[in-house]
Amino acid sequence: MVLASIAVIGKEHNPLYIRAFSRSQQDQSEESLLRFHFIVHTALDFVEDKIAAQRNAAQGSSSSSGPKLDPYLGLLYPIEDLRVYGYASTSKVKFIAVLDDEDVKDAQMNAFFRRLHGLYVDTVCNPFHPPNTELYDCAKFQRQVDRLVDAGLY
Amino acid sequence: MAAAPHKEVAETCFSYLQMELVELVIGSDVSSVSTVELQRASRKIEAVGFQVGQRLAERYTKDTPRFAETIDVIKFICKDFWFEIYRKQIDRLQTNNRGVFMLQDNRNRLLARCSPSLERRGNAKQVAALYARFPAGLIRGALSCFNVTASVSIEVGELPSCEFTVKVQESK
Amino acid sequence: MLVYTLHIFNRSGTCMYYREWSRPVPNSDLKSNNKLMFGFLFSLKQLVAKISPRKGGGFYACSTNVFKLNYFETPSGHRFILCTDLSAGDMREPLRHIYSHIFVECLVKNPLWRPNEEITNANFVQSIEKYITSL
Image 1 (cartoon, rainbow over the protein chains, first blue to last red):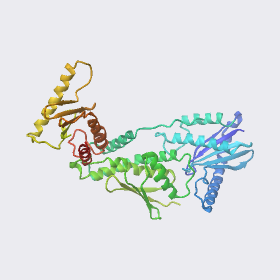
Image 2 (cartoon, each protein chain N blue to C red):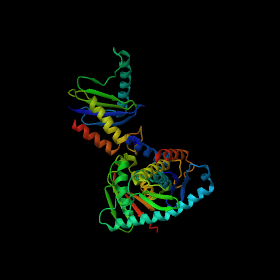
Image 3 (tube, each protein chain N blue to C red):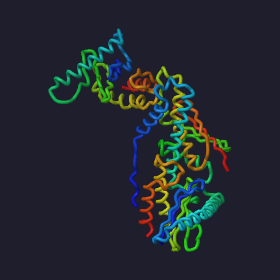
Image 4 (tube, chains in turn brown, red, blue):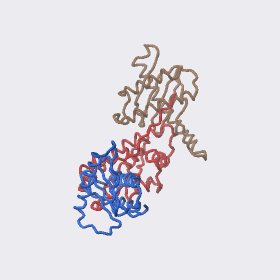
């Protein structure tokens, strides 16, 4: 299972960080990055749908809304030979991961997203980082994401 | 994946830092400050609280599920958020169900120690209100982290209690 | 045990706080008496440091045949002097309590207190009153 791309989208659906990972050199072109931009933007619609569905389910049931509004959204949609997974945090920041078409356990993806969320929170808590701005300038975030992707899923 | 060790800071450090923040913004003598300068200082202190509140809210909700309604956000601020920062919860929450919430803290830790000397009893409440500006900024920052735009005003009643009035602006 | 008076001096010798509970002989001139007290303590401290047979230690009490003067100095230079009758035991702990639980809590942690100024804060005065009457 290979991670093709991850993205962090801000509250106003503004992309804060989109990064493509690949083993082969040819995939590292501008074109492939644009392709991932497109995939991630399409994924946002699915994210909104899932969030609305969760909220309706929570309102429909009589119990409290705690565990039903889980940040992990699961598989959003498949496209070509890739699968797109989503995670929406409490502060409306969304994390999207694009994987190649292999089965992956929800628990694994959940753990991965939680780690990524943790890295994002650490970066945002830096007082020199202006809120709601892109994360490309933060070298530490880039390094930690690299490490997470290398060590994480395979 | 070992969890990072739990870090702690002495509460007095945080209190002294807050006290110095107000001193820094006001300038030298607190008692001889004009109303305009007091307002300017209030805004600055509140802005600092805003930035800190945003980041703290981001950190404290890392592992919690999403909030369905604005009232859930307010409840989170009253309970978990205030507890993490001040080791106590907001004592009373009232709402008029039309976007206005009143949070009352009966024993705000910093205001509990505010005791004016005899000469300065006059504007003690005004000065004490400055110390309540930082928590007001924290509330506003935390709310904005969850995309809730609001204005927070404070009212210092009998020290050490103070009231935060949150007016949520409906944005759809 | 009877407590007569309490003085609090700061590092430069200003008497920041003075309170008397019972004083059969009234105070003639408060300001000059305070200066006298500070000067006496200052010289006594130097004397003790010079003639002490063993290294270390400072003085914490001295008595006459009618009253006992208990002394406590903090590293920051604040001096607490409690005058009691002779039946008072070792007053080091109460003086330490006055410093750490009353002085620090009511004044140092009080955003509205200015150091080196006369102490008139209601909170402090009440706490001192409560503590001393409980002794």
